[in-house]
Image 1 (cartoon, rainbow over the protein chains, first blue to last red):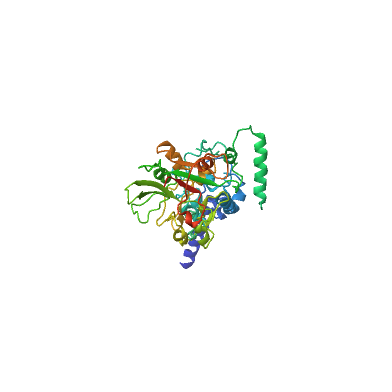
Image 2 (image 1 turned 90 degrees about the vertical axis):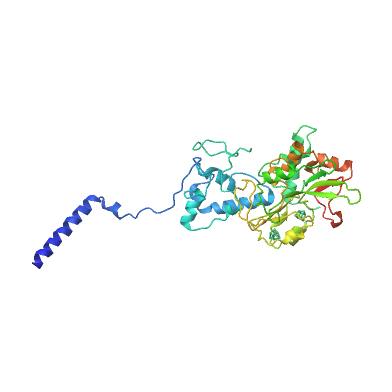
Amino acid sequence: MIRKRKSCLAIVVALLTVVGFASSAPASEAKKPERIGPTVKIHRGEKCVEDTEFMRRNHMKVILHQRDETMHQGIRTTKHSLKNCVDCHADPKTNSVLDQEGFCSSCHEFASVKIDCFSCHTDKRDKNAVAVAPFKGVAKRVQP
Amino acid sequence: MSLSRREFIGIGGAAVAGMALAPGLRLVELAQARSPDEAVTSLQRWGLLVDIGKCHDCDACVTACHEENGVTGHGRPATDPQWIRKVTLKDKQSGYVQTLPVMCQHCEEPPCVDVCPTGASFKRADGIVLVDKHICIGCRYCMMACPYKARSFVHEDTTDQKPQVPRGKGTVESCTLCVHRVDVGKIPACVKACNKDGNKAMVFGDLKDPNSDIRKQLAAGVSTQLRPDLNLNTGVRYRGI
Ligand code: SF4
Ligand code: SF4
């Protein structure tokens, strides 16, 4: 009796294994972990002012440098200004970089790094300053 | 005379540009044409002249300033920020009443900068006195030191700031002489409003340029600083007090 049960179990296990393999082939993909990471939506422009790889690691240094130059020396080039970041990357629906899927917030929440910028700076795009259709080249800033 | 490298380059640049330009173009136009990647220099000093004789019962400047800079209150006058205000003077003897706008006077020797423990309060090379809110710790020493009560503390969370004018809770702020406008060659919002909707009582310009409107007007008649006894050499001057 016991032996019979055991063999039954073995058959079931074998069957399940075969079915399992068949449905999840190829085997290598089954082992890949689910991709984890923030949703980073790019809304405007085809190209950032610097390489994406560079910006991922260095955006904070770039805007920190520009911040001091603008504040103390009145240098107002737009290339590395925080305002320029927001003008390009704000979500067209909310106009913000901070909402749930916002360009800044999604990544920062994922990495658990608090952003201080927006306690003073607006997280909203300057509606007057950008006069370029989405997805057509790098946005150009136009002074109102 | 010691000139920094940047100032020297600035002079060179101005001279070259000056030669290339047609005669009759004034230095102020050169100044306003400063390209966005050029640093400000002490070749300029921005200032304001307010003619109290023309300034009457009107607050176009105050409205325009607070609109331009996104300065909003919460209906609590004691703590709401105020970058510019109208002050009423009454002669007790004659009963004659005058009003004048008062804002940061952009002192050449600013007491707010002297007392600031962090270096957040500073004077730009072109004379505009600002608070670097990235550094300000909100100690409010500068508010105590300012003889003109020009500074405000932001007590509450800010929303909907203007893109060019960041403002945030826990920092001190005051008139920036519309630095974001001046840097792109425009005049401050209060002056623009006064000329348009007000009584044309304000003139803005470069105090160091002998051909500027403000210099000519200052040279043509008597004007005063508020509290001249303090020897702060303010950038904002008044006429007719
Ligand atoms: S008026 Fe007050 S805030 Fe402005 S520079 Fe002078 S001391 Fe500083
Ligand atoms: S409140 Fe800010 S700007 Fe004023 S003295 Fe303190 S640190 Fe300096």
